[in-house]
Image (cartoon, rainbow, N blue to C red; front, side):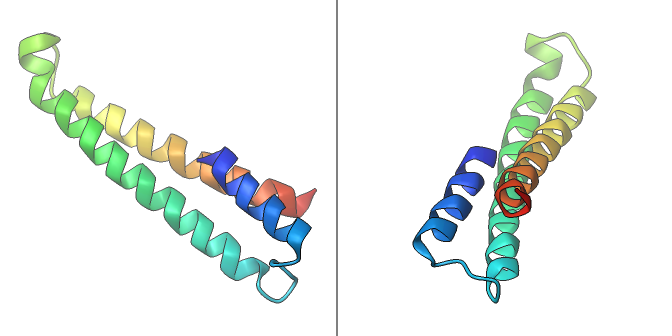
Amino acid sequence: MGLQGATVIVRGLATGDIKDDNILTVLKSELLVGVSNGLIFGILCGSVIALTANTLLQSSPLLGMVVGMGIFLAVSIASLIGSSAPVFF
């Protein structure tokens, strides 16, 4: 997700599609996409792990919540850093 955001921002800056007046709008939309993807993937993976944790992993279903939260945070932070780094540099 971070690489996708960086690519979109760099391409927009290079082609002139992104200017000073719309940079915040583009950053917000990239961040929204990253957070949405993180939420979707986190819920899906966390649910699968929570449902199978007892039988396959001999572990607590709480593991699913931890993995889901980790995926959500990783994808969201990667999107934030990937989208904002080209603007700062």
